[in-house]
Each structure stands twice: as C-alpha cells, then as structure tokens.
Image (cartoon, rainbow, N blue to C red; front, top):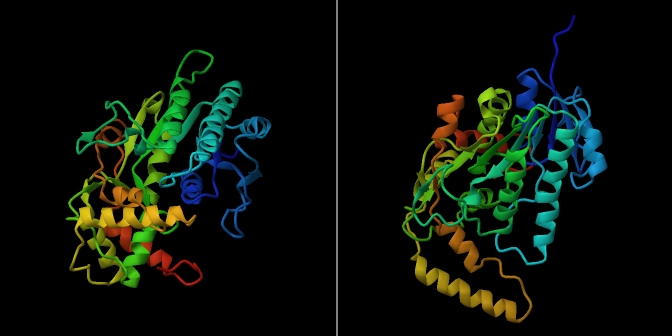
Length: 338
C-alpha cells in the first residue's frame, strides 16, 4: 500500500513566496492543494498539485477547498503599501481579516488538524529603537499591521472539538529573494543602476529573512506538535545594519558600495516640500516623507523562540541569501534581472 501523504491546502500560492512554500511541502512528503485568485503560471506548479481558483473572501470557495485536507497554510493577504490611501482600509479588512475568518471557521468545521498563518513583524509598529520579542505588546501603526494582528487572534483562538488549539502564527521579518518585490527589490535595482545614494549613517537596524528559509520554517511549524497555539517571530536570527545590507547587495551584484551618503534631516525636508507641491497640483509624488521614514526606521526583532522551541535553523545568512537571489534573478529566462 502506498504511503499516506497528508493533504495540505495552501492559500495565496501564486504570490511571491507561495511557490517556494508549495515546493518545500512537496519535498517534505505532503500532497498539496492550492487556492489562489489566479491560475499558476505555465510550468510554475508541479503537475501533481491540485490547483483551485478562488478567493478567500468567498466563504463557499474556502469551504470547498478545505474538504479532506489535514492542514491549511494561509498566505493569501493584501500586502503592505507605504502610505496607503484611506479607502484601502476596507479592502485590507475584507481580505486580511474577513478572509482569515473564512479560513479559520471553515477549517474548524472540517476538522482540520492545523492552521498555519503567515503574519508579519509589522504588528509591533514603531519599536522606538528597542529589541522586541513575542512577549512585547504589539502596536501596529499601518492598515496592514492592524489587520494582520486582528487575524492572528482568530487563528490563535481556534480550537478543535476537544478544545485543543489548532492555530500557529509565524510573524515574518522583512522578506527578500529573487521573486519578492517591494522595498528591497527597489533598493537592489537602484544599486545595480548606480542611482542610489544612502541617506543617513546607515546604522539603523533591519530584521530580515530569505524567502527559502520561510518555506523551511513553515514545514517545521506545521508538523511540530509544540507549535499548536503558539506564535513565533521568524528571521535569519541576526540584526543587520542597513549599511551592511547595502554592502551585501553590492557584493552580490559585483559593484562597489556607494561611498557617500546624504544627511537624513535635509533630505526629508526637501522630499516633503516636493511631496506637498505635487499633491497641490494633483500629482502623485514618487518619493514621500513616509518613504524616507520607512528607509530610516530601526527594526530589531528577537527571533530566538522558534529556534529554541522548534529547532529552526536558518539556512541563509545575508551574504548567501543575496548572492543566490541575484544569481536566480540573472538566470536566463527569468525576465526580472536586476
């Protein structure tokens, strides 16, 4: 008789890290069903994956997708946007809170063993230069962070018929990798083109994780009995100065790091003047005060708990991660070379 391969539902599997998560679970011996808004790109999804098209805000689609699965890995979300317009709050709540509610309630009803939820260290908000950990009270200051925190609570309070918790939350550090877009992709592109000048001293800290290590942590957390009802910060285990990040990216690109930096305060004032002027004439500024504040923020999140309780060991440090990311982006046929 063939060995039993537990069936796992992965939502949001066509996003930036979804394919890596699917691949990691397949390698670990799971069968995979996915639920995504869009079909997987041609050749991106193994033929033995059952790919369903649907939206997590559609309760009937979620209820159908969880039938017969042992566990759910919930990635689907509306991701962080710097300085989003107010009208996006309803959409954040609809997807990040309402979608998670559908997933959790459907999973409980279907007797699913575990729900693994991908959250974010953004729930901590402005850490004011302090190192924070899982015991720190979250103070999210963005739509994304607030809705993710609300969704976390649903996952962590979910219980099976015997009253045992079924939810696990992974608060991910800032993610980088060959498929990931956002701030770090923009930084890499600017450094590659020689258009980037650092702002400030570069001593503000960053807490990051390479995308493949997220997939590794997900497989570990889903199968570990001690993870039920727990939340964990997930990073590469280090605090990196922004200057070190820039140097690591430049080494991977084969470029010399910028030799000069711009003073932070005057840059922010100048950006603010242009931001206000462009808004007055109805134009969207390419760089805002919020962009500069994001660049200058200090983020140091302790991620030792998952290492101590579950034995998680990151496979990539800053150098190895960026070297592989750049190598993969430059691979022929990728179409997203830096």
